[in-house]
Amino acid sequence: MMYCPRCGTLAPEGRKFCTMCGMNLDLIAEALAGRSATKGLRSLLEWIFAPRPEPTPEQKRLHDIRSGVLTISVGIGLSLLLFLLLNAVAQHPHVDPAAARIIRAVWTCGLIPIFVGIGQIVNGLFFWRPLGRSEPRAHELLPPSVTMPLPSEMPESPTRLLDDIRAHRHDPR
Image 1 (cartoon, rainbow, N blue to C red):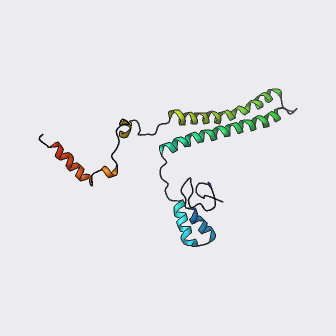
Image 2: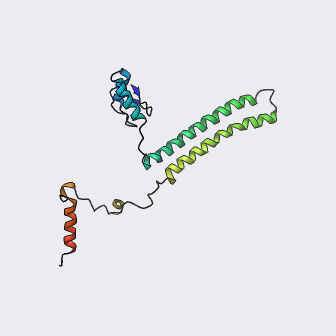
Image 3: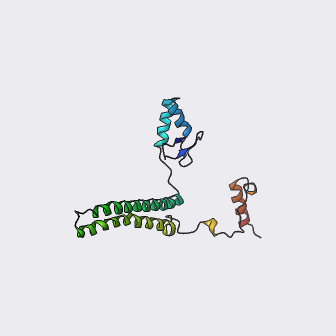
């Protein structure tokens, strides 16, 4: 078992590529084993620092939802920690009762990330729309009965198809 150095995903033994980011794990295994270290290390560094492709709109939407779940989890943990810790401080006999009420209320600060996370999830589920997709694509407008021709049914060249269209358009019938 090894972890992908790019994204941290656990990969089973013998896997050639990372399932999350596509990293070449064979190359890393060779570099770790010391085989062709110079060439392998250079290729590894080029791969790691290569520009990554832009995520798809669906990947961005799912990232927003995952971020919301993570933010809610942090908020719950923070609220619980503050509640338990500051409740114990407020119960100390040397703490003024008026200050104890304020100390006990500080745990509510953990509600802020919870509400932020809820907002991220609501945005990802209901309000998220990729930019530039205000109009449906052409294939979405076609009725289900219309199908594209198979490659075997297409003319041998696109210019032949254009010639056929032009000939039909200028036909005097």
